[in-house]
Length: 376
Image (cartoon, rainbow, N blue to C red; front, side, top):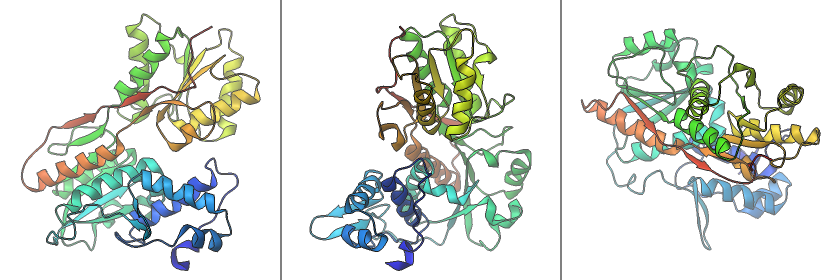
C-alpha cells in the first residue's frame, strides 16, 4: 500500500476538495499503469488510517473514480481497478505498440485528460494493443519521443501543443498512422484525421441560452490571448459565441472579451473588477472552462454580486467542480471519453489501410443548472 499512497499529499490551497484531490492521485496511478487492471485497492478504512484522513473523504474519492469507470466495487470483496475491456484477458496479445503524446504527462490527473485516455484504452484493449503514454517534458525533441519503440504502429496526438509548425513537420516525416485529438492542426495534413468535441457548437448553444433568457450584453472569459488562432479550442469557443450573437442580431465587440484568464481567484477577480467598472455592465458571463466559472462566482461573491440574480454564469466541460457548492454551474459537457474511443478507432482503421473522415466533431450538450437566470 505504501508504494502508491506515500506520494499522496493534500494541498489546502487547491480549488479541489480533499476527496477530489485523492481521486486525482488514484486516477493518475491507474492511467499510468502503477495500479494494474484487476488489482484490488486497499479498503477505505485502511487508506483513511494510512493517510490520517476521514473515512468519508476516502469513500467520496472512490465514488468519484467509480463514476468515471476506473474502478468497480464488488460487495463483500472490495474495490478493484476496472479492466479496460471485459474481453481483454481472452484476446490474443499484440506486439504492436501505440503511443499517446500529451503536452504534459502530469495533466493525466485531471478528469478532462483522464476521460480521453480511458476511452482510448477501452478501445485498444479489444485489439490487444499496448499503449504507451509520454509527455513533452520527457523528451528534448519530437524524434526522441519515438526512440526505442521498434514496434510502434500508430500515434495519437492530444492537445494543442502538438499542432505547431514544428510538430506538423514531425508528423509528416513519421509516415506512421497518426490521429490528432481535441484540436485542428495549423494546416491540413493528408491522411491524418482529427477527432474533437464540437467546440463551436457548444459555445453557440451556451451563448444562445443566455440570449434566450434576455441577456444581450454577455462577457467572454478566455484563457488565450486576443490573437488566438481560430483553430484552437478557445478560438472555436469565441467563434461559437460570436456566431450566436450575430444570429440574434447582437453586435460582437472585443470589449467584452477578457483574455489570458487563469484558473485562479486572483485572475478572475481582476476580470470581475474590470467588468464592474464598465459603463454598460454585462449581465452574463460565458467562461472558457468550469474552473474559471467557479472562481468567477467566488470573485463576484467577494464583490457582493449575486449569481444568478445579478449576473448569470456558464462554464465549459462539466467538471466535478460544477456541483461542489451552490449555485451549481450551468455548463457545456464535452464528450472526452468518446473522443478517446473514436480517435483510437480511427487510428486502428488507418493501421488497417482505411482512411476515415478528415475531421470528426462530436456533439456537446448544455447542462442547465442554477447559475443562470432571466435578465432582470
